[in-house]
Length: 559
RNA sequence: GGGCGUGUGGCCAAGUCUGGAUAUGGCGACAGCCUCCUAAGCUGUAAAUCGGGGGUUCGAAUCCCCUCACGCCCGCCA
Image 1 (cartoon, chains in turn cyan, red):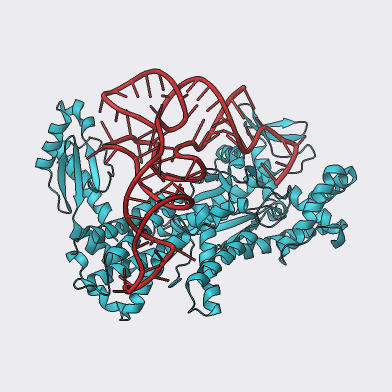
Image 2 (cartoon, rainbow, N blue to C red):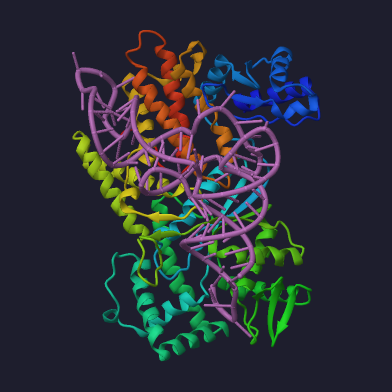
């Protein structure tokens, strides 16, 4: 598919090279809307061409020859304006056809690991940032033509699961706190929390847990089995929470399977003779600068870095690109995986998206301390809030319809509020913000889609006939402006791969323009251009559906 | 102490990579808009010396140096 702005950009660049010289760097930028679609400031050419920038700008305007748009001089700047008819026709037609914003297959596999939360407790809002970023990024890569697989690494051999297992074995239901939700992750986590608290003050408990860890590491089948079983139960809770957010994984890889099938030992033995590694009383470590990362204990049992290295070696065998979504606390760990793979000459090297933590009233969320907001609770509150909003403004809907929309709007709000922030920025969770359904929020965006749907529904005729409408006669600012913003979607997709918040910001901007269009341009009551406006509405609706889908958010027909 | 990240109106964010033409939105506040395709919307007003200081440049929120605040990491935990 050819996208209007990308074609125009290509034309501008090649024309500027023809005029200014082949080897010159073109600082093409996007100016504020009223100036044009692209701009080139001419200051930089000044020293090379030995002319004042104004003069260069007027030279460019005189010599350049564009077929897809026009050019204007503004002092030392040259502004480029795309042809309205071209962008209208190209964009509206392609959006109605569908797959606008999708690129041809690139024949590359990408393996995206996300979520990978410890299976000892339900997901809280802090953990949830990971799958929301990961799933959105996966959806973006699909649009870019990649063969995407998402994977959840299940850490079923860690200390957290050991504590949980000890608790389940040694505690009575009467010893633990109330379960908030009848869901396996919630039901089990109270044992984890109690055991974890007991461990802090009781050395006997600590020893008991240590013993379980030893048994698990020596391969005691019963203990390994109960670790796996408990992890699976908690994991099933994670999976159902995530499903509600429209997030699924293509595969799950458990840490224990890597130990059992010998992959961890293989990785350790491959690393042992290499110069990056050293021995500390029998414990193997990797060292650089003044860092040491231990791969095994003195007794030879493996540590988390070794297991994760083995995991990534395995990933390298089955994909072309490795991408992990990780909390910022894993930065050093990520570096050690890279170092190890480099030393083992394994490729591809993994890429990472790091995100900052979600805090609650200024303090980091944590399961152990109980200072956290469960994802399940947030989802339920969001749905409840959405239900209230619907009941306030609609009396004509059946209870099922209310539930359906409340679910779509609530889950959308949860995802949107997290994805709209740049990953490396910290988020301080606040209920009033999380449940804000105005302005920069999912409901704002969904509502624009519902309004478009409503127009088409009231019109009532077959949208097939709009496919042949030529919208290029429309010339007003609001109409063309809306379509121009729509036309930028493919570029936004390209930029959003590791910055998914850009997609969310774009969705808000586009929705806002549609809301203005809705106010300024009656469609069904239009004296003229009715079909053309209907074509815009239909193309907008189809595009917004895809944008929301890229964000993993439902696009309700009414709300 | 060292490394990485963040700091933009009362609050929350975009822009920082790739320096340009009056710093962009939202929430909140205030003032308006529903005989008109759903007001979860729209319009307007007030509100920012872009943490601070130096530097580079014709030009700095953006690049460099210093500095302050906050977060994360620097375990034979994961």
